[in-house]
Length: 107
Length: 116
Image (cartoon, rainbow over all chains, first blue to last red; front, side, top):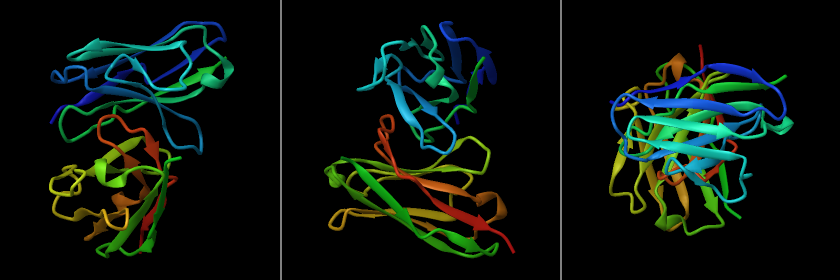
């Protein structure tokens, strides 16, 4: 099965910063990758699908890129409400594995 | 508005069985593949199982294969997860989730606790 890794596992950044989170698949998954944000006590929310498509209602400061095995989620001009845990997920074929998550803290 | 409402969780002894249900509304249930995703307390997201829109195809994570069975009733708009031979490591909040081509809607989850 394809394994998903994320880096960093956690980071702390300031309001206005640009933040990049990386997700790597152990084998190529084309562009079948989604990014989610989860805040404490809440269900995850879809941010990006098909590696680079912005989900409806998601602020344009979020963007995704990548293809094959290497993917990035970028948050431009970090806002206070962007704290939480960010997960990537592959959905080319089952199992639809999630990455281990990246915890983002706002300084 | 999409609504997914899970039920059926609870405290169960190791080796026991539970059946989870997810009542769906606000969308054309019979045209969407569906998933179960779980999250153990303080841990990350784990995909558990998926079923095609018609119910004709099912997929499972290795750690539940042979123990869990996903099914659906498109006439009643309900998704199920039959969980047998439960283990302590199955303790988690189990979410019903819409679509397998990125998950666009999640239920709030039903808590399963496996403990003696």
